[in-house]
Image (cartoon, rainbow, N blue to C red; front, side):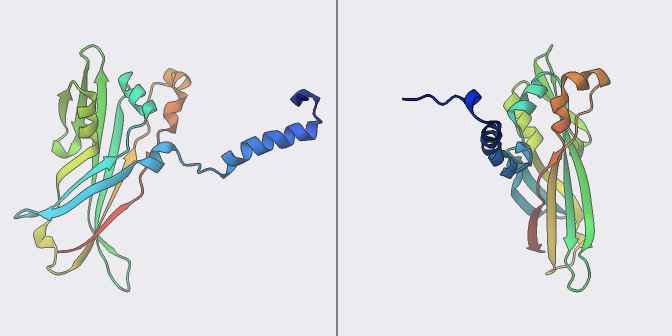
Amino acid sequence: MKRILLKNQPPFLKVLGLFLLLFPLLLSDPKPVWSRQAQIADSIVTNNQEYLLVYFITKGCFTPEMNKAIQNGIPTTFTFLIELYQPRSFWPNKRIASLKLHHTIKYDSLREEYSVLLSERGNQTFTVKEFSKAQEMMADVSNIQLILLKNLERNNQYQLRIKAELNKVRLPLYLHYLLFFVSLWDFETDWYVVDFIY
């Protein structure tokens, strides 16, 4: 059996072979893995006596690279955008409420604990030892008072839109050279839409 060696091939065959190997990469989805996997899920729209309440979680929002960076003490912030619209037939939908929430996680390697800051809780910081519990707190948004019920009309249709974004990590200048991968952390989920009648 005769062995085919690449170095004995004409240059155009080498280029063709390389092209055939790399061509599937050109056709692949250029979106980062985080943006393809992260999604808003399990949303609930309900109310108490005074407010319209919103609950949801973000699934698939932690990548192995992100976990490693958090374990190395790099703070990571998720921003959640929540908007309420009143659909209109001949005009653009009217936005009647919007909120921007921030969840920030930071690991303290000396104490071996995670601090999670939740803006919707008055920027209160919660401290936990387990990384899984900290991840759960980062991804879970619950009991958000979006709008007073008196500002909604009964039997009208409304549209709730939710999006999660991973904020770009800010590092001192000299660390950007060592941790260049962090600059790729600027992603967002698709808008998650819930139509409902109040």
